[in-house]
Image (tube, rainbow, N blue to C red; front, side):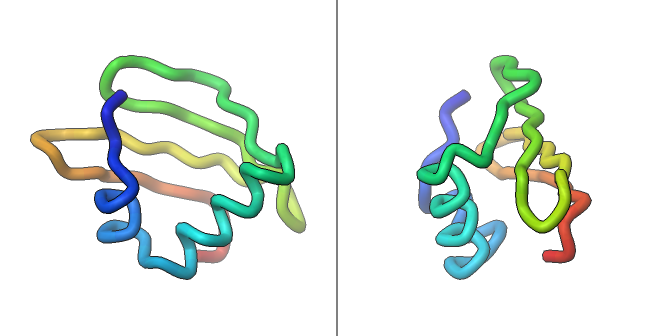
Length: 68
């Protein structure tokens, strides 16, 4: 999957991106499915949240069960 940092920040905003980066560095992100055009992960925050992202035509579409 070729998702660039700029794509994520454009979609989610810098604050959410930075929070996700902190969780990643703290090893709180577990990828559960990775394919060429999408991925799924579980993020351990206050609860376990499911994150999905898909790259379509250079744009990111995603969802999360988190409060953001």
